Length: 67
Image 1 (cartoon, rainbow, N blue to C red):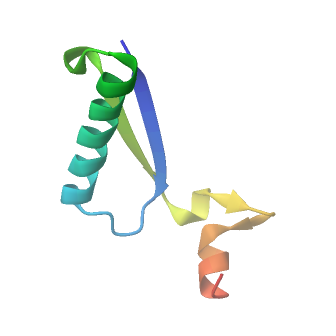
Image 2: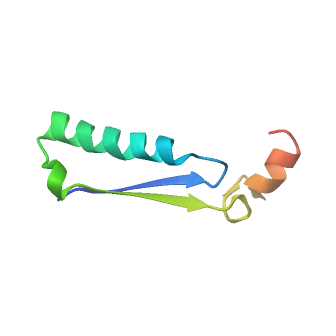
Image 3: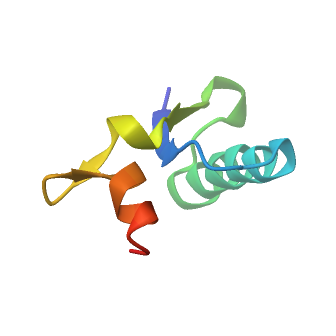
């Protein structure tokens, strides 16, 4: 029973893109590892850019600086 967590920043990912991610990960686990799609869980966790940091700065600050 695979349980996959995809963490991304909350920056305009569409429902269609999320569906593609969930289907793609499920298919990959089935194809490569033989995992049953009916018992494969995929969770997309969207994190506000204020709550995600790199190099001591939040993504919000880095985006404002053009990085």
